[in-house]
Image (cartoon, rainbow, N blue to C red; front, side, top):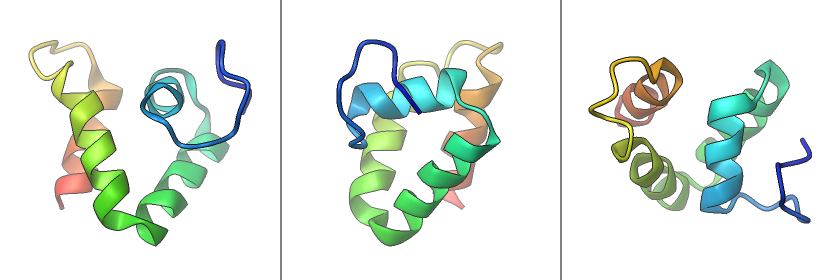
Length: 71
């Protein structure tokens, strides 16, 4: 996925945020695979991003990923 203003394909915090907020199923599968292959690092990054949205009841995508990572 081409991320907003990013010129790389790495799973940086900005890229993960973009995938969660705008990504389609294919990008979500890539993020899931990244989580499976680099669990500790990916979990930390995803939870850091999702924490910023925890009080927004309409940020369902972020709530989903927070719960997915914690399970």
